[in-house]
Figure 1 (cartoon, rainbow, N blue to C red):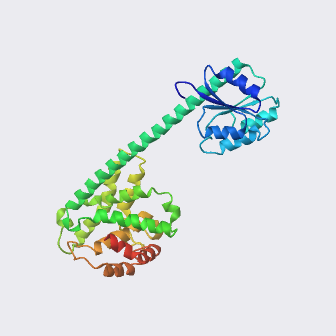
Figure 2: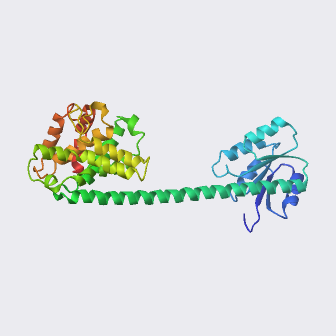
Figure 3: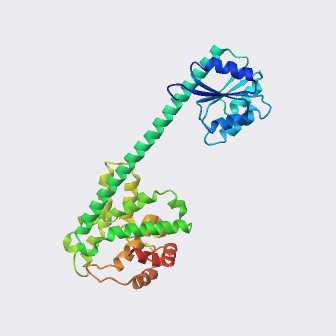
Length: 354
């Protein structure tokens, strides 16, 4: 609306009807007239009305054809249309309404009635626009809030990850690298249409982010074990393996404050299952084959690859090629055969991240 006045286009091939309609509405609205559908669309190139009053019976294209073209044109589809007609037939009225008209006014019309009907419809349209704008603004606000929360979560996770790694500066960067490997592995699986039944239900960004907590249980492991420069004793090995169950307990404590959280669900699965083995000899639950969640099967390969290719207190880093050979030997025993085959097909991409 300009200067508080709505803009209305009247479309009718009868000059008398155009004149009567314009005179009835001119005091309250800016009225434009078009004697045909062709003239209407030429007029629409110059202005967007708040309402169109459309005659049905016209020689160069009836109102039904015109409204169909309006509703099929992106720029015009939201313009409300009221049919003006001398045809008194319920079937015609139903047809017009089904094509998208908001009302049906018979001719000859009462100027007072026409004004009142238009006033009501424009009020409804204004309320619809206001509600739509409110909804859009609300969506933007929610999206912005969600992004802020996501960034805050990520910052907090990064801090926790750095805290874990600060206790063992030799393995620094492990959590960040494994997150990148996981992102890459998931993308590759999607490209090959493998495990899409599971992956389609994941928020991939959320899963990758939650992987930062897969070693959170190491917070509970003593420095004397975590940083021991050499082979661990049997007792120390058993204690070290407990970082998986310690991780579960830590995440479950967090879940008490934020129940039904998808992020924490994936984090707990990763913490619990990334040391399980395909043949059932892993820990902590000795899961076997596809009993192991897909998150754990992926992280098992990624975790070992990163351990092999980087320095550890008990060993020097192996080359990428040597590490790949070691992982290959674990196909069907330590690792999922399908995932190993895919890993071997794309091992050079993992090397780039390393």
